[in-house]
Image (cartoon, rainbow, N blue to C red; front, side, top):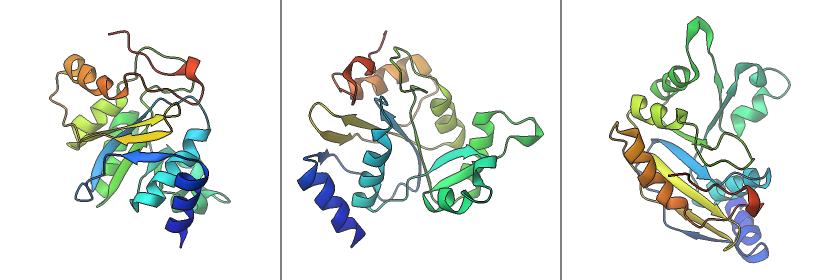
Length: 185
C-alpha cells in the first residue's frame, strides 16, 4: 500500500521518473547522492527507497538516537555513530558495516547544500575500507529524473576514481541550480 502511494505521488503527481536500477543482490554499499542543494532531497530519497523497496541507511551521532527520537531515526534506517575509543568517522562507519548484514549508506559527498567544486572524500575511504561498492545516484530536478548508475568498485587510486564517479553527475541540476555540483577537475 505504501509503495503504491509513493508511486502515485512521485510519478503521477510530482512528474518524476527513475532511470537505471538497483541490484538487489548488493546488500552493502555506499550510495552517493548528488547534487545535494536542498532539504527536499530528503523526501525524494524517501520516495525512491519506498518505490524500490530497498533498505537505505544513514548515520548520525549517537546522541540523536536517544529518547524521544531514537526509535524514529532507527525506523527510518539510521544507525548511531559511536566514535568513542579514538575512532575517526570513517573507521566508525566501517565498524557499522561490519556489524550489519544489510547496510546501504546514503551520503552526500558534497558535505553541504551549498555550492562546491570538490567532494569530501570520506565516502570513498569508507567504501574502500569496508570493501563495498559505491552506487552513484543523481537527483536531477531539471529533468525530474533520478538516475541510478552502475556500482563502482574503488581501485585505491582516488584521483582517477573520482573523475569516473563525477561523470555520473555532469549536467545534473539540483533543486537550487546555482548550488549544483560542478567539478573543478
